[in-house]
Length: 424
Image (cartoon, rainbow, N blue to C red):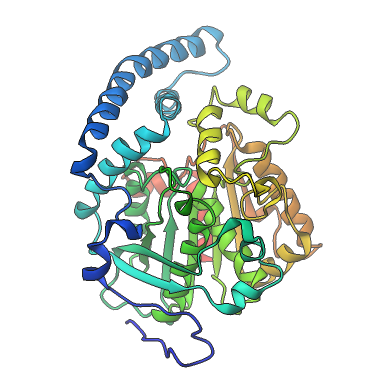
């Protein structure tokens, strides 16, 4: 099932080592265990844990009641439990700060991993010289970014069918959201479970990239992009998987779009078969004229707020005054959209973008989808069929759907379209 690479061949110009658990997992500074509970930080875990608990039990309930009453009184829409879920998600994101992410939520989420995933697969990856020397790859061309020439990362196996054939069977690589600041949240697990039931022969892998909830600039952008590419290379070259589908929500949507953008800029030959970006974070730090006002209007119906969106953007790029992140095509994909580059990408893999009309990010996703249609240049590489705008849908709505009834789940319009795209 796992193919060992020929490290001396020209194709295998990277270096990957599987399951080096003993040496890597024991070293806290290598970024593999960047979010675990640490006794030396006990006072910080306790302080920020109490702070988060107080806000969660006081501010959030008050906001839920107020916002619910506002919907009922204004009668703009019929009130339902879905609105309560959105308000809870929005206000929970509103009370977050970097320290709560770092010392409370991430250690909590990591504690849940053993009951959900198998032992992780560790990947040590040397960036190919061809990638570093590519004139189109600004990650290495911009020296001020101090991009690492080697990265460590890992991924978890959510499900691996017993008779899985990497040459033919599909593998879903799910890049989770959370503004690159949060680990995989439990809200995604129901979606993964339903995907497993929908495609019994499909393997599901979940990358675990380094989160940005830290003061260390070395753990900010572009590390997450390089780690995402490292996982893709491992799956396609070391595991030998041919039928690869990469999917991501929010920041994960940013990751999957950046993977194919990176592959094209580095003139790679191997691409995923399909790319699904659910509510992608198309612009991490850039706002169009009037977009903030648009976000303030739409956030009353969304599960994400402008405050947390801006915070995650700052955490993603960190504090590097020598870099113009606004014009970085990996940070702000839509703003720096390169038509010729994406035209070539769309020829090599099928791309689908989904978002909701109630989303905070709906404007940037709408513009991104239009630009991809234009890049398709009249062909059927990317058309309206590759875009799903869920009516009154909210941020990452298809992922944050807790239905375990498969008949009901597969009939949800957004889910149905995603499943249809995966099977096409």
